[in-house]
Each structure stands twice: as C-alpha cells, then as structure tokens.
Length: 496
Image 1 (cartoon, one colour):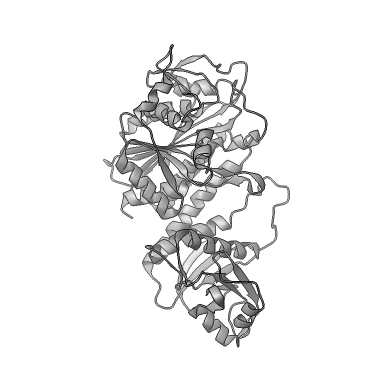
Image 2 (image 1 turned 90 degrees about the vertical axis):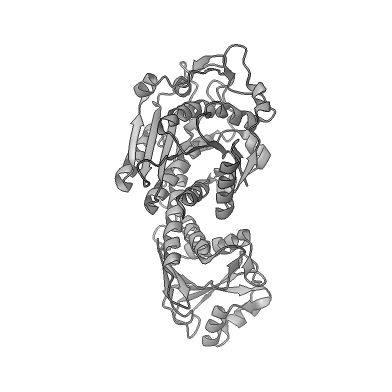
C-alpha cells in the first residue's frame, strides 16, 4: 500500500473516496462543510435522513455527491468535538479503513486535521493511520481454492490531505507506520498458516528468504548443532516429533559495530499437543498459534529492517513441535539445559519455558543490551488479564517502563506482573535443580520465575502473549501482537 501527503481541498481532490469527519449532533467538520457547500447541502440532507450520529466508530458513505471531485464521500464519526482519546481515535480509523477496504475502493484521501488526540502529535497520527490501514487490508485466503473477494479492488493508495505544504516528518511517519503494519501482517500470516505447512523447517526457510530480501544475517542451527551446544531442554521437547527442531538467528546490524544488540527471543512451538501430558481436544486446533512469539519476532525484524533502523537487533527463534510420540519426553524425566542446570519435567505441556531457557542461554553470546522473550506461555495469564493486555514480567524497573510506554504509545498494551523471588520455592524439585512447573497458584508468575533463572547475565523481560496473540470464535485469527509494541520499543531505543 502506498501512502503520501498532499496539499489539496476536499471538494476538488480527484480520488475514489474522500474521507471527512462529522461530529455529534449532525455537526460537520470544516472539510465536510466545504463539500456540503459545493454539493448544495447534500451532506446535511443525508445526515437528517440517516441514523449516523457522529459517534466514534460510525460512518456514512455517500455516492455521487454533486459538485465534488471524489466519486464517494465517507463521513466518519469523530465524537462531540473531534478531540478523542487513543482508544476512540483507533476506533474511528479502524471503522473508516475497514469500510474503504470492504467497499472495494482502490484509493482514498483523508482530511482529518480536525481530529485531535490528547498528547499525540501529527507524526503519531500518521504512523497509526498507516499501520491500521495495512492491517485493515489484511486477508488470509492463501489456503482457499477461491480467494475471498477475488476480483474486487483492494485499497492500494492512501493520501493525507493537508491545507498547507506536506510535512516531511509526516511522510516519514507514514513510511514507518506502513513498515509496522507489514510486520504485524507477517506475524499474522505465520500464525494463521496450518501446522502441516508452518513447521520448524518452514520457519527456517522463511527466515532465510527474509534475510536475502531485507539484508538480514540469518543463521539456522539444526539438531546436530544443538546437540553440540548441549541444548538438552529444547531437544527434549522435540523428541516426540518427526519434524526436526531448529534454532533460528536473525540479525539486523543497523547500529555501530560495537553497539550491544537488543535480543528478541520468540517461542516457536509450531504445534503443541501438550506431548504426553496431552491437551483436551476442544480447540486444540488453536495450538498452531503457539508459535506466535516466533511470529512476532519475524514481524518485528521485518519492520526494523524495512525502516533501516540505526540499531543492532537480534531475533532468536527456538522452533519445534510438541508431539506424543513413543520417543517423547515423559513426566518425571530430568534433562540438562545448555546452562548446565537440570530440570525435572513434571508436565510436558509446560514446554515453552524449556525451549526458551536454552535460547536465553544462547543469547549470552551476543553480550546483549537487553533481552525480551515473547511467548504464548501460560493459560494462567489469560485468566489474569484476558485478551486485552499482554503480561509483562521483569525485575528491571527501567526496562519495564520502556516496554509499558511503548505499549501505551501503540495501544498494544502490557501490564506488569510480579516476578519476585518469593515464588521460586514453588519450583523446587527433590531430584533436579528446578521443576518445570510450580502448581496452579500464580502459574504465569512461576513460569516467568523459571525463565528468570536463565536470564541472570543480562537485562531481561518476558512477555506472556497467551491472551493477546490470537482471537477465537467467529473472528478466529492471529492478531500480530506484540509487533507494534516491540517495534516502538526499538524505535525509542534508536532515538526515533
């Protein structure tokens, strides 16, 4: 999708659709008034004869407005006075962009300067619009014999209309927003693919392809490589699968050579049956989303490279299936992790922490500035926070603030949870250094505490995205979270 800014007037601009705000009580914005005057009151009459009330998230499409250069006019509800909070602004833009996409409109021009968001500037608005537009145009129909909406136009060009000369900063913000949206959609694509296609080896191939296209360094470790490194925890999860495990490293070297990288570690369980501790059959199909942490790392690395961000970033993806084969790890088995710590596996369905702990140890070789792991780790986090907020666990207050701020900026929000040593007692084992589960109480916390044992040598945070990575039911599908949060975190680190 192409984005640009243009000095133009709403009544004369030549476009398939011009988008202008309207407020509560039938009040038109100045841009809408100009169209109304040229259209001899057509907008005013339409408002009187419709149920459109100007509430955020509502819209009204008008065709063939007389005296106007655009083929269509889309009125979008902007609340009482156009001064919105972040949530309502996103609702306004999401509704408008979805309407453009579903109507088969190829290009549109937006005149939204009269919409303001508290404590947000025009660059933020432009970034959000571009991100939301790319996300709104997303379709996943590659597995269908007849693609949804085949033959209809797709929204391919979006222009921000201005009354003055276009701003270079605004144009740069649009480009960054597009990169974020594309990263989100890449994560969604990987999550939505069926597990018979999206295997560990498939992820490795996609990483190599992305590396070639986006000038990223990619290295893939196979089972023999991991055996040499003594990654006993990761390989224990892979034992029951015919699909060989992979450890994928993707490097973006945009900063100075001596700059310590930020390392992102994404859980890549491409299908999770639970192993010998087999899951119930209901909704087990959704366990293809257990690689959503890996997908978010793919999406973030894509966005970072597309932006040519002046920062060193490394993405690590431990990828495997968790299957109940005759060779599968059993409850009661004890394995030795890459760190040398022994782990008693009491539940094979607590496998994410096993592959992450070896990846965290592997991350030490990069001498990282900070490490963030991202994982659909615990159902307990879904119970705690639902589908709204990602769980954030870190003992580092400054790092926590950076991540929380990035989430608030992008509305890809997280909520900080404890990761106190008080919970470590729940992970005691009579037979090994640590057990892989700590019982039902505070399940998401003890999972994070397990990971904390392998993250002592660097600044570290854990994001539990079990509740936010995908939607169930009628809208089933990957959300692409938390690509926006992670990318903004890195942009802030880069000084952007």
